[in-house]
Length: 180
Image 1 (tube, rainbow, N blue to C red):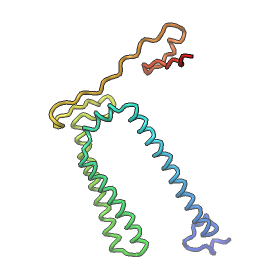
Image 2: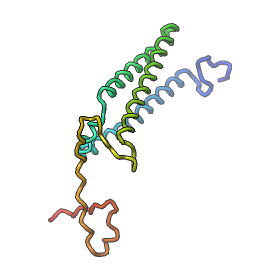
Image 3: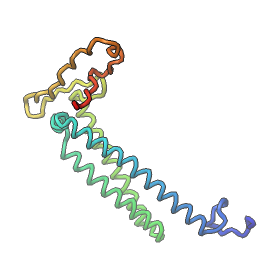
Image 4: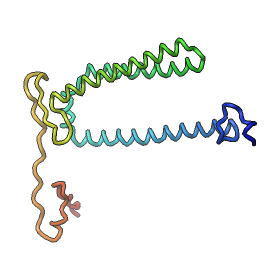
């Protein structure tokens, strides 16, 4: 097929509009599959971690501000709506509505970032930082400091013998096989 026979909406690397449509559809399905795999893995890791260490989540919940979190959720949902609606307005050629909806979406983005600033500033002030900088203090969260989660008891020393040098570095001993 020659280049002059292509429709103006057909990209140069496709032979037919149907091929272009099918390729786009396959791309969207692949994208959705990768999102399901990524977030499925993240939610599984979260569920396992939460089941194995519930005390950490009980301790950490006091540092979450439900008001700002809820407000941010509403802002994200509304800005998703206004953006999807703006796409539809663009498809229908409704320029004034498109400008209004894009402005509302941009306003939602500014609100989201402003709330994130407030949240992270609060975390910084309370010492809730990463790695070696983590030093929580909870003034203003009810007056008295909550108890820290109990640390695990130290693991017993490895047994003497040839396998003692290959003991795991995590401080945990491998589980003994079940008794017959």
